Image 1 (cartoon, rainbow, N blue to C red):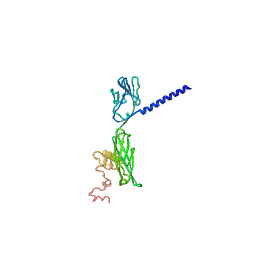
Image 2 (tube, helix red, strand yellow):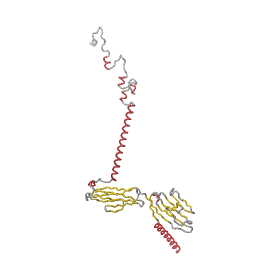
Image 3 (cartoon, one colour):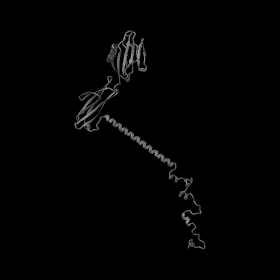
Image 4 (cartoon, rainbow, N blue to C red):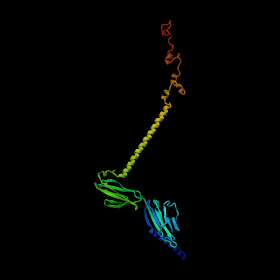
Length: 328
């Protein structure tokens, strides 16, 4: 039983030592802030005699120095960006990228000495390129004031720190709300900072009579209004083009049918000498075919009246004085 208790105590002591060492490592770590494109130099500033060094990134060995020679362990980790310097036994990581942020460590030992490990926390930031202030304003009739809602925007780093000054205020954050009486104005300053770069800009806001209209706003809403108008114009152009194409196809289709001779007008106007009307009709039984195509001989009646009165009156002879004598 005593052996078991002693074993448990030993395990707890070991765990406590590891926890203490871990907390010391975190507190001893050097925090470096670098900009994208900068370089990080990791120098093993230890006595050079029989020195062996390992460079680690997030716990993984990526380079070594043994017997006065450098060796790359993981070439893919910083491919083409590692420079080894024999003069001061250092490794330089060039052209830093945002994804290079992490924990670096330098583990070194001599012939009979284990040196203290160096820990470096690297934070890579993008440069802040531009800062601008945008805002909108609303009129509070009950209080007779203009309320301004302002926000600070920057291009570059995604997580900078913002600070505002002006109008007897000094505050942090990307947004700011202030109120002004009619005819009052103030100049505000917004600063964006990410430890490797800093930019600022100013904006003057005025509470005027035009601020009493609910639609009064700054360039930010106006930008979306312009986008909406542009989209509407493009939609109208596309719809008009589609309508013109449909009309053109319909006209071409009608013209094709007319040229094919399938309308009644084309059938009627066909050259009579080329083909008889009765031959163009399947049954050949219409009244037009009967009258036009079946032409009687010269001696037969030509019309209904001819048939009734055909040879009704004989020619005048010596025995008759007129054609009507036979009837009488």
